Image (tube, rainbow, N blue to C red; front, top):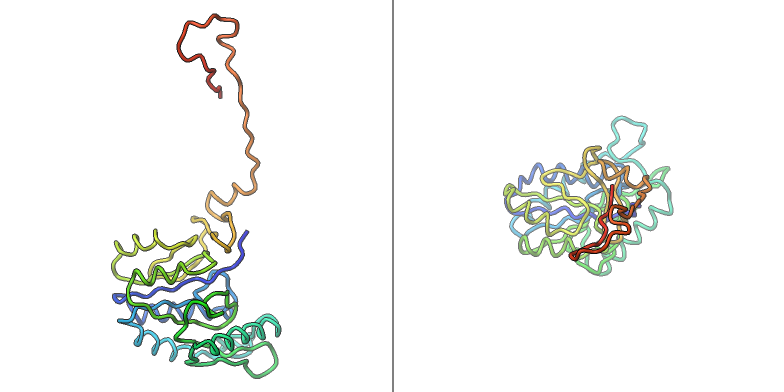
Length: 248
């Protein structure tokens, strides 16, 4: 049972910033941001935050919003107007709590439930765009001092579906991945399902897994059959452990 998420997209000081930005744009704004396994909370260490933020905002502003039937469109409308309105409410509440709008922050024009690609900075725990799932084209940026603070911020969520980690130090990445409270961690890439590996979450992101050999287990009834040993029936105990062993 997969119940959505608020995936963290952690960028450390030794990350490939242009590549991370391109992946972050794709991971956040694909399908108008309406993806459970999508980057939603961008957690940046101070050393690279300015560069990442500037590049990310520039790329978000450049997205072509329009008719999804037009091959030139890069971002279409949301599924329903009420979902668009709920997303806008999350944004306005967060701005009232101190978040800053770097681009977007308002519904789009035209027929359909459009929402302008939005990037918010100065996002902290307690704001709706940090605490709740933003199921639309809104990226929330949180700055932290170092890798330890990044893990702490990523784990400060009721969700645990997936996450992304960008760094050139793979040994550190493996260690951090074990510290992240989430069903999956994708290092130097965006989250994607693959039939070879299980997909699923923890916390309020649900339970169980799909895909891999774990997936079919959800559809299998496991039966236990226990047969007491008959070898010593009626025999006099000669001491020692006479507990019957289970037979297969």
